Image (tube, rainbow, N blue to C red):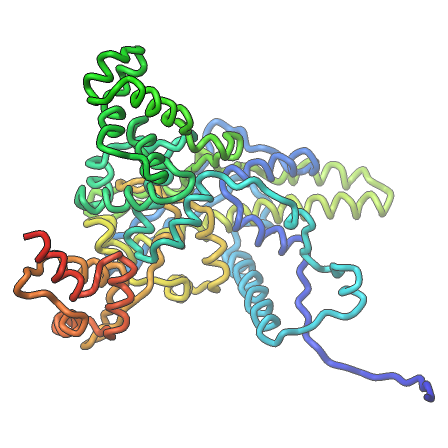
Length: 501
């Protein structure tokens, strides 16, 4: 084999992620609490970055959504006393947004082309411009909330149930108990008590057994049912746990109606149970949910959307201090270092301001799109995806995805994660108005609940009714939604209704 030396010229496209651009993208993904922690670290490292501690600090910004049909109006967001080169110039704002959007589009295009890194980068595990983070591979203890959320998505794909379930999971304390009355949840979400109870029972089927109970008796009962030990006598014992706590065994035996030996065995079984199932996941990992955005009813009937200014760090880049140090500096390396630090400080201030604007714009669009939910409740969620929001506010989908991840909105109906306002769509038979998958499922459930023994609705008949209501849906989709809601077939429902007579 003959080895020859030769020169070749190749043309290629590569995305270069500067540290500043990586920082700007990272800030979009952080929660408010994580953001405060990050800024505190930067304050310690950068001599020109200072906390804005003035008595009167201008608001970060708010906006008003007039009506669902109106175009969203937004007030200008400002940062106080920031160098001119960092903020305040609309052209800089546009350039900043375009930089992140271009980076997103290039990264997406690179993924589509399946570009392969060169062997040098592959051998080292990370290139010079890689955002490889070895901490990703470290093990992390799963929180009770994460554990329940993951299971919930496995047992249902109903948008309303997922939103209701997420709301209920946030109400479950560290011991695993649900700490809000059904009626109160139903009022906040615009649902009936029965609809909330259905989701509560769904949560109570998840691991750890006993989670989602409203009382100790219910918690122990769920565990006994899981073991097949919840007999009528055992249920009577659970109904009179206060007697067991008082060691009133005579009164307890009289209430339960069993012999002394049997009662002793029943009590032994109860002592094997876990009264606080949620504690198995520890307490230190419980996530504190702090709203990033507040939504309030406006005087004109619309919605006022405001950033949570209390948790947003307020910092400035000290231009005067920079000018003072550079004027007395004679060593070129020192000047370069000072300029780099000032540039980093200015960029961070700019990034924080842009992050606030982006979150507000996305939140306002969500409110505009999902006005029906805020007015009427979960059943009025509209079909919505990342692309629709991104197109409406002229941003890239991945930017919207980052903004809505781990960001929370405090509404009159409760606190919700932004991502839960995205739901799949079912087409309409006439016109351009689509229906959310959640609203279609709810309509199917309504129709089946209203049927009588003489008029059991088959899946084909349900399709006919829905299409008459301008909902374009296939029979197999109806069957899939029905099965996902745990509703038997028409033949089984007819048999069950006959047995109930």
